Image 1 (spheres, helix red, strand yellow):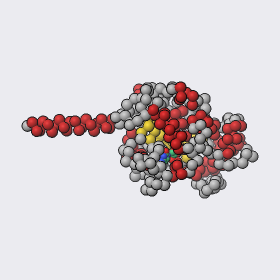
Image 2: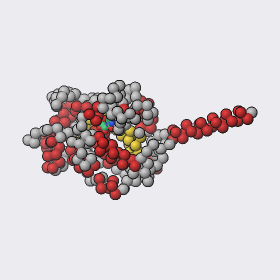
Image 3: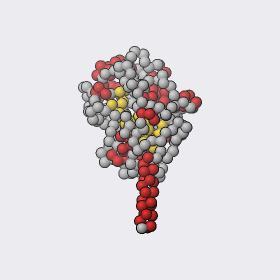
Image 4: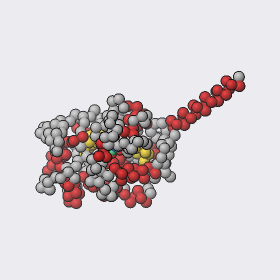
Length: 319
Ligand code: C5P
């Protein structure tokens, strides 16, 4: 009898431990403005708790810099254009305004505010790091209002760890993939040719090469395309990464986009795995270090910024 009672108590304790593991906060990065996330996304009420506002954060964050290219005349200053043209060695003789105008004859230009700034929006930014393998974060990721993915991110076969939903997919011509209906294709343009490519890929298909062969046509919802502004990339490069690396990575750019568009930002799939490998979660070869190997971005600077944002409670960082 006593033994049975004992077993019941042990069972109850085990159950409590399992529940606590499921509902506990992430292992690091909880600062003064933090809140305990549930198994699913935090509720709207918790959203307001993530107040941003350390002196460090405010010194870097600038709400006045809009993430999107809008197609209005002279929206890019000459210093932005000059810097942007160096990223992938573009000629300075291009007629950028004409290219942007042509782009917005094929795609709708953003009208007013694309997203309601007053809404409490929870967003999951899902990087492609191998540290997602075995994480079991799938349900938690999918419970956010927006799920941001990027480049060649895969879902099939990885649902338990990375989730199934996508609302925004960040890409550039050389990393482009087809998307399902209703998903925002978010173009990160690194050169004028990238703007020409997206216009071509949704219309004539005349552009098939940048510095490599690229998709001639793309299957995606044309009405949902968003194009990031070169000014936003320069802002990240100047204000956030302190001009380290040639330009910010896709993942860090998506994270900054989320900081400008969402009230609560959760970050998954960034950094090396527990053995120090920088591979992608779908790659068998963990030593490939695909992301870090390019050296175009400063992975260490970006990672330490993510850790600082997490430590201050501005983002939730799931390791
Ligand atoms: O390699 P790729 O650019 O497609 O990965 C998307 C983003 O995920 C990167 O830009 C980077 O910010 C992040 N990433 C990471 N650690 C990895 C792989 C990717 O932080 N091991």
